[in-house]
Image (cartoon, rainbow, N blue to C red; front, side, top):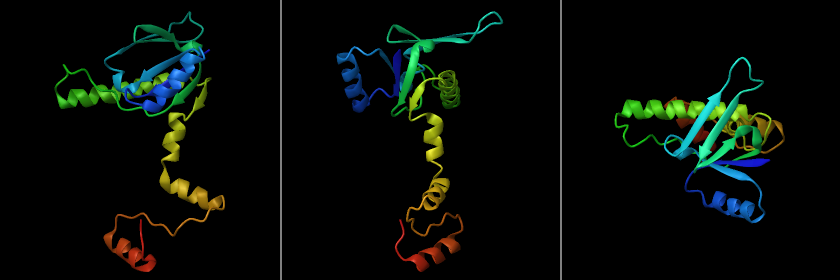
Length: 165
């Protein structure tokens, strides 16, 4: 059993938790997403004879077989940073987009793991208009709210409610 911590290189909270895991000798691996394009290697294998796909990551010289990951904690992932030899902005953007796509594929391969803050859940929680309606439906007292790109409607709303956030 291995715990995978998905974060960034500069996350002191993850550092603290990892030190606790080390003290308790709990197997773990740290995936700093900002280093995904520079410091982490990966190999994905699939063929007609294999029972299931096989993905191995090498993080800081240590191989991690994703089949061994039983739980994942997503803390504060950041976009992967392209290799400094890639200087064209379009190429840099392409690398980041493709690396984020591959990270999503890795997360999908970990669908049987126990997740704390799955990226899909985080993304869904960031759908603020839905969250506001859900909070109201669950009985929370929510302020009168408006989302618009029409300046006149926004001005009338502000005049009606007074203080706005």
